[in-house]
Length: 226
Ligand code: CDP
Image (cartoon, rainbow, N blue to C red):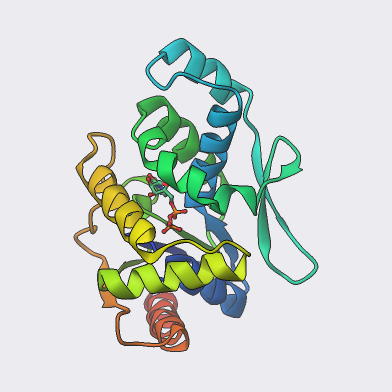
């Protein structure tokens, strides 16, 4: 079967990464978490006190940023920023609170999209994010758009953070998700929106296994019909 490109987009905490990771594992495809790239840029900007409104500072910082992914001994992909494993750090609330603002910057998007396209040039990839089906890979053979109710999304994110050792108030999570939804969907540069040819899956009442199953079935049908 020919390799295809699978784009999984949607709002925060709808199960994109969980689905994308497992689909990639089952198909033996590469998984790329594009959100992790924006989070790594945000971490760098915070640590280096980059003024988001200063194009020269932003551009110099982007030139100094190298992001790559390494699969750990448990088979999970971890994010490295300039050679340092930042997987834990980029998931923290201090990054979640700034990442959407950083992601509105045109130069940031151009730099990330160009790297994402390089990573996906040979197909056989599952990438999740906000603009994968619309901007990064508009020709992707399979585009999935995930949605879920806010309350469910917030609980899932709270559990995820707890599993990483961070106890965060549910109200703070809801506020962060709501704010990011708003910034991500209304920004000028590649806003979050469903691609016309994407298939919507509402994950509110289905299990992670069911989500994965649906996407795998769709992927196989696309591989066969090519
Ligand atoms: O995991 P979660 O759903 O919270 O978000 P993420 O996928 O880690 O993405 C974090 C943030 O990065 C999003 O809220 C967007 O602001 C930005 N992002 C983006 O602009 N474009 C992408 N392709 C992926 C993420």
